[in-house]
Amino acid sequence: MIKTDIIIIGAGPTGLFTVFEAGLLKLKCHLIDALPQAGGQCSEIYPKKPIYDIPGFPEILAGDLTNNLLEQCKQFKPGFTLGERAEKISKEENGIFTVTTNKGTEHQAPVVAIAGGLGSFEPRKPILENISFYENNGVEYIIKDPEIYRNKKVVIAGGGDSALDWSIFLANINADVTLVHRRNEFRGALDSVEKVRELKNKNQIKIITPGQIIELKGEKKLESVVISKDKIDTEYEVDHFIPLFGLSPKLGPISNWGLEIEKNAIKVDTFDYQTNIKGIFAIGDVNTYPGKLKLILCGFHEATLMCQSAYKIINPGKKNIFRYTTVSGIDGFDGTRKEAKKPVVQTISN
Amino acid sequence: MSNINLFITDRDGETHEILAPTDMAMNLMEIIKSYELAPEGTIGICGGMAMCASCQCYIKSGHTLSDMEDDEEAMLSEAFNVKENSRLGCQIFITKELDGLSFELAPE
Figure (cartoon, rainbow over the protein chains, first blue to last red):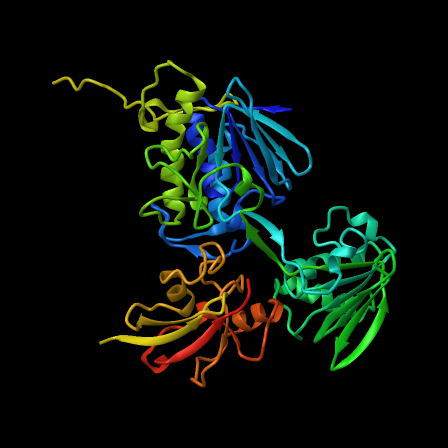
């Protein structure tokens, strides 16, 4: 059981900045994210895209922004549960929430901040009859344990970075890899494309382009796939089929938590971005209120105000005064202290 | 006047005739969003970077459209439910030449 002050669901920019603002109020945070790394959309969808409307940064790459936010909140030692989706929530009589992930990891805190953006990222599934029958029975959308593919026949479908990177990785552990893509060109980092080409030339990867998987076969588990190329359908024996067609966000289980939902977003009170359930806040792209704009900078603002109310819930009756970091400095939970240098006072005698 | 008419068929099959400004540098995905013809969170997820295909449309009228750039072509090659007349709404900007354009939103 993980215990903290604020459980933050979503480790995107808003979630990460919440750690910082909470830290200034001496509140500890733990982040849960369905993706295996922090950064949310910024690192998953567009790490190399420049953002121009972060105050103080005329231009910053989304991936760099994530790294800066991680650096900024590091001193407050946040905990992370990554690669797991927040699934269930319950509230005890004493007001403490328990958030459980799809893998059964339990987290407890008096405050929950949902900073889930557009939702948790789920793999996009190709439209193939009976594909659900073979899920985890030969068809995997996410590679959790690469070792299971060693010396196995694997068909990977997709044309982006993950299809290329996993093809390389699995070929290197002696999987018999066939990479199928609907067009001849791949959209991935240049060196990945080069590496795949090299492996193809060494007969370590087979490439079928432009090709498409049109049928899955097998009685109890996946045994073969039918690949269509140039209007000719060929059946290939396989142990695994891994479709890598990117991820799409879904609000998912959060929509069943009893929160008021409007337009696929969680309704909040703009006083402190609290939801209809006391102690649960929603900040960033996941919330909605009159005049809402889905901007990172709005998420930062919402996180900051939210932490003030979170403090009052966590420390009832305890006084707190708002301070500028330029005045108070920052005391990290890791023992570090940052503060402005004091000016040297000297008298000039005449 | 800098408005044009567009005929947009939503995901429930209903066709809407709407007015779209040509002077706001808006694209088809944005006009769908502004008229709320698809629920929030089901369109324009990547914000218009040709990286998610949530704004895939089927172009029904014979208008001449801007050519596809590499990123749009690449995205459509990975998207589902793609047809000959598929385009990404976020990559088609509203100009006066598109007056009367008719298109349908692809399934989610």
